[in-house]
Length: 78
Length: 384
Ligand code: SF4
Image (cartoon, rainbow over all chains, first blue to last red; front, side, top):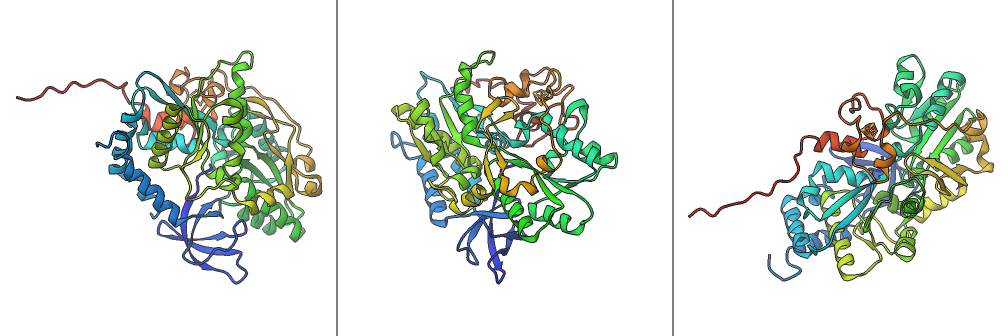
């Protein structure tokens, strides 16, 4: 029920209220009313037809790097 | 899919599993409650439990809004269709949830009731615009994630003067549920649940931030890690909890930084605060009456409140006989300990909500874990 999926914004209407996103190969129209300052090519989290939040590319990369480091922590052997 | 597939990579899962294996203290147990159904689903679908050392156990929490909605509220919704002849719009998950007397919205629909599945509150508004002669009720359920879209719909209805649209509000709050679980060992008649730490909500926290969970370490001395819903997120968060427990630390940490910060989505919070206010108490399946755990529509928006328009009465209806959903939802029992599991109760013929929602623990056990045998220690002899 609380599932939400990351999607890339491909177009925004002239009022900045609705956007078209690419979600797993399909295009979907969603509302931008809950988020500020979204631009084309941003990734947003989509839930029941609304963007809930922007997704931070930088943080995503940092988290992935943390996973990759996991095997190297502790006693240093892996 | 970008930002999904990377968080499911097999080789990284192996690394994380190795790190967890190295860091656990074999002299103790780690009972980690994953609060959300989204986590439960990931744990089962990707076999995360199998990658954990045997002293790390995931305890499934009440974080599925479909599962925690008491039967009385389903009965109310059914009543709206049957007695008031409304068009009832709701998210797909609600259609098959059993109400009293084995009724469900799907059965009511099959019998001619006007029940419509919608993907978004925007669809419900459109149905109201298209049917000016009918009353259209949006049966709203969900945690903090799903509440802002309902607030937007009510504001939109007000802006358009759409008076044939109302909302039957069942929006509930996760921090109150966590408090209830932590306090429940003291509730007479309820089996105590021992939990060492929490995997905190992902998308709920996208809206409310991580700050509302800070009472958990402060008052109850349990660590919380806000965890994304992908399998690697769950594993990394489990590792972060294990480290906190090993080091005797106890704080709110955030694994899901790509979406969540401490403050959350302030704009969405403001919209919710404009339309809704705290309800004195709300009944949860499994937790009973929980103080300040739900929202209701403010007086200023009372015209769009279905409970007022149709004078919906609070009814308290018992769960299906033999259904252990209440204990399953609090992590006190495993689905397989329910006598109805897999015999009388299956996803095709659910007796309880935990078997309906794909995020319910019973449905997850049935779909992914039913045939799993208990782990067997395999001895590998060196070949000489
Ligand atoms: S198996 Fe069915 S009846 Fe038993 S607790 Fe789960 S949902 Fe309820």
